[in-house]
Image 1 (cartoon, rainbow, N blue to C red):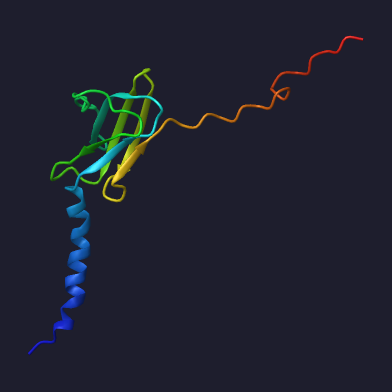
Image 2 (image 1 turned 135 degrees about the vertical axis):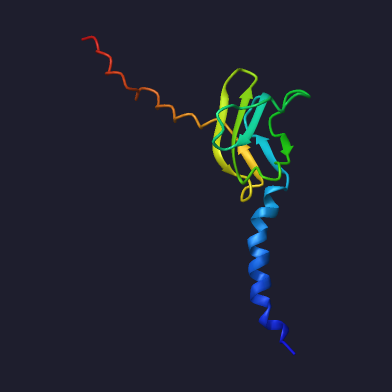
Length: 129
């Protein structure tokens, strides 16, 4: 009779190896973290040249809202994402690992800190005498 604990390492290895494959078929979310509605969303497996069709065919994606996607069986874990905002600005994220990150947040880059008043890049104004 064979001891059941001898097969445990093999079963564990098989289960862990299957986890990424199963994650590829699970839905993931694209979250609009901008202050504006998004009018277009594109998601394609990384490396494709064309973005494909706009996925927001039912209307804009409000700020803070998400769009769920279920990738195809052989799509893999890496996706390129593009979100187009109502004012025309775009947020692009290439190579997002949707197997590791089930909610991909799309936000505009932070604005650089504004200089303190009177401490800009300009030379100081001449003081009349």
